[in-house]
Length: 153
Image 1 (cartoon, helix red, strand yellow):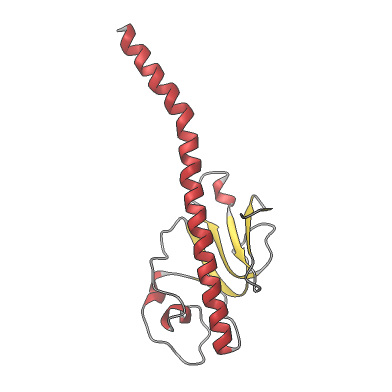
Image 2 (cartoon, helix red, strand yellow; image 1 turned 45 degrees about the vertical axis):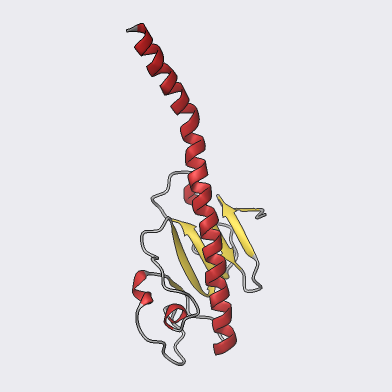
């Protein structure tokens, strides 16, 4: 019986030490993916601007935008997918919410407005719920945690 208690204690201690590191690793992977997607969406918006003399109107990307036809002169955000500036993909239910437009910051505290952004969804636990990214019109990507800009390497 004592041996069983010792084994349970050891497993409990290892779990207590390893789980926070695992959670941070998972969140960092989600954040890296979000940064890459923001760059992709921002570049699509920049290409749209080259062809149409303006960025798309501000909006949030969702699954319904993956279908439909490209409409000449339309500036709604769905044109990024419908006109093949951006490939269709699953947008709903992701760990981050993605937006694009002429001047958008996803509601990230302390962030400037840009042409694409991503903010961690509200289901995330603290401190991860404050993470986000903004791509400026000049192509620079900025990261934020708790309203403070973080260096991106």
